[in-house]
Length: 414
Ligand SMILES: Cc1ncc(COP(=O)(O)O)c(C=O)c1O
Image (cartoon, rainbow, N blue to C red; front, side, top):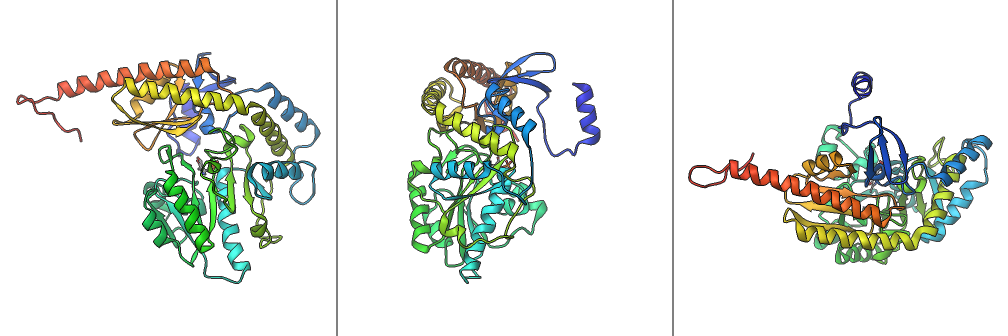
């Protein structure tokens, strides 16, 4: 551990606050640290490793493809991009795909394609975007411009101008913000980094109505909530949206970096050779992996639904046991425990007890288990969380008792 951290401290740019653990191996829903200790992984590389770790089928496909052909660039054809695009078209209803290497790049592509659409139509002042408070779409200059968190944005301003953020329950604000200058509205059907917050059906319906009424393009950011995690190919399908563009990332490669911008045919017609590009995007290795992952997710769909329902049930039971849980939000295998206190001690206590979950939006314990998770693993995770919440509540109670003044008043913590 000390060698690893010392070397990183010396040479790796310090942009991440890491948990104090070094992982060297994985198997299914477990990760193993350098001392051989097993951890139940309920964050799965932030919603990425949907088939679990060291999946034999995925490993075989990657090995075989790497011995055949990994990369040729987008100067030439290869057989797999079309197959993957066709599969995604069937899942999403959007005819075309542009392949890239991450979620951020998928967002970046969609923001460009939305502008290009209006530019091609000769409407050159339709350049603005509407995004949501608590939304997260990445940290490149474009994606950051439609990401709400002021702490992420401030050091890098000025960002792309003309972005309006709306609270995700402010229907009047949305109606006022979307104008004939708006190129696109971008929204996550379930906000992930911003605290696992599903859009309400009313607000989701308002987005559909307002974009349709004004002809504004709708970009569904499905990078975290999409591809089966909530029991549907895409979570927007639960709202009945018909987005014009969809971002895909994370789960699609189960760890092999790949992202995609999915584009409706009428938008695609306004985009031309040279408008966008990437050297790696959609190479043979990543598209082969993605084809395998999507087939597996199809096959697992009934099990994923059943495990999602079980997880929801177990977390509801956990909430009834713990006052400190103010809400359980999410859908299926994307869940957040909203606490009335800082979530970090719960994350740390869980790690100590062998469960990986993460904190987001300060007071939220986020859980994104592999989609291969079993009922026994869900039982085990909720049992560990129960213990972690008990220990944190006990510490809180002691701190509150200790903070009582002579007159019985409780000190307010800074
Ligand atoms: C909804 C959403 N959009 C975009 C991104 C950015 O994706 P990536 O980190 O793969 O570039 C994320 C990452 O967490 C995300 O959750």
